[in-house]
Image (cartoon, rainbow, N blue to C red; front, side, top):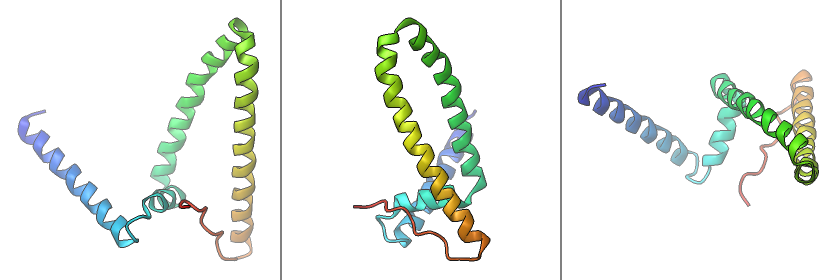
Length: 119
């Protein structure tokens, strides 16, 4: 990549960051997390990237968990219970919240309220 191409790419990225910053300010300035959540809800490209990294996460964790299970069973007992607890809570929440959204969409109701992102 030449210097000119690099400068053009940096200018493009700067313009994109400025555009996103203006969008966030237009929504109240402190709602950046709400903006990210909304993007995840409606943008299939963002959803794809999140799920791609989720798949990579599971692929990386599989050998690590397997090694812990066979070669450090004491540590696995502690970590395994904690990991299972966290994944279970997340899975239950995600399933229920998604099912509620689907039910509302099925009968034409208003969407669920946003998950609070600010204290």
